[in-house]
Image 1: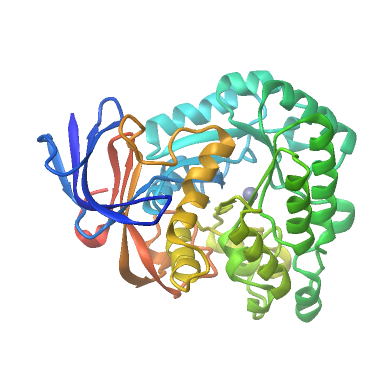
Image 2: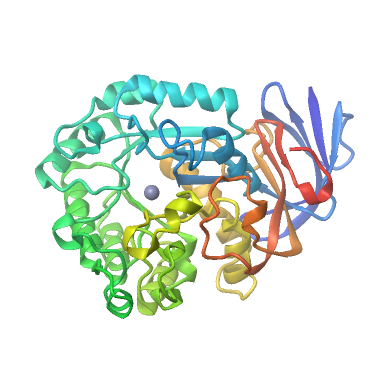
Amino acid sequence: MRRKLVGGRLLDLVDGSLTAVDVLVDADAGTVLAIGRELPEADEQHDVRGAVLLPGFIDVHVHLREPGFEHKETIATGTAAAAAGGFSQIACMPNTNPPLDEAEHVEWVRRQAAASGRTRVWPMGCITRGQQGRSLTDFAALREAGAIALSDDGKGVQDGGLMREAMLRAAALDLPIAIHAEDETLARTGVLNPPAARRLGVEPQPGESESAMIARDILLAEQTGARLHICHVSVEPAVALIRWAKARGVRVTAEVTPHHLLLSEDAIDGDDAVYKVNPPLRSEADRQACLEGFLDGTLDMAATDHAPHSSEEKAAGLAAAPFGMVGIETIFPLLYTHLVVPGLLTFPQLVQRMSTRPAAAFGLSGGVIRVGGPADITAVQLERERPIDPARFYSKGRNTPFAGWPVTGWPVLTMVGGRIVLCDREEGGRP
Ligand SMILES: [Zn+2]
């Protein structure tokens, strides 16, 4: 079956130029057959007039919550949300119940994603059994089952010797280790960045709890040759450490979230857990450092750390509510509106940080639209402005601090392997 996207504009990821093209795909093979004008007939045509065609976005940090926490999100709702955000591929974190610490659990997620998921789903396997930080999982078995990386996300691996052993084993298998950097002897039960914590009367979580563990793991990666990926960077020293590590040739990549790029602790106004996230929103100087690192490429990619929770859970207030924000449906319009429109980042740079670079870092296909490549395509209406409305989310989670923000650049069509997985509701399309 052949599908054709008609009337789009293709973004050149090098020079930023836009070329009017149609794109013909083979929906059975899942590949792009031709790009240009006056292409052969297709079985199905989709009008994408006015939209810009981009390689499908890739988010390497998503919590799908299934199995175990289906009241927060499921593979079906989380991947629908991903498709709505323009994502064709996501990596899901293993802090489910059971956690993805055995091959059969990873296989289960892959089967479930094939049955009910709209996007490609790449599970990460746990570094330690039960994410308890005491003994390592069977990395080879997890990789065999389909894990693309290892992570104890949600928790830092406290034992440096165990992390060294993990890196040695991961390096032998060429599997990236994605770290949630949090030294619990420094973080304790901290909830917010220290100034905000003092202001609002909750426990502080100092930035050193993050940067100290990043420093340790950079040194271990240098020594072991492991591929280290650093999740959700939030503080200035962490950006500086990563810049230093890259200059020394350490195999390190890093991600930053839209909330750490666009919000500081100053945004937290009262006992509202929608702002509670781990790592916490930091100082304005930290935010500026993250932004600078994202602009100069020290922070390779944007990732959402999409972390849905129920409204009841988030109503418990700053001290008691769980950490996390949703983000997968709103990241592109937020970053396009706040980084590309004001001229901080070029349009191709943003697309590289949301597609090309995550593909390269995790060895995924995609990241570029080309003949013979995967038909993973996102069509975005750059001029469409609409405020962020959590009531419209496909995600079960409504916990976004960006509700009401007027943003432009909404995805209107997402194609995964030649299959259309999102047509925007406003267009009267079908999902
Ligand atoms: Zn996470």
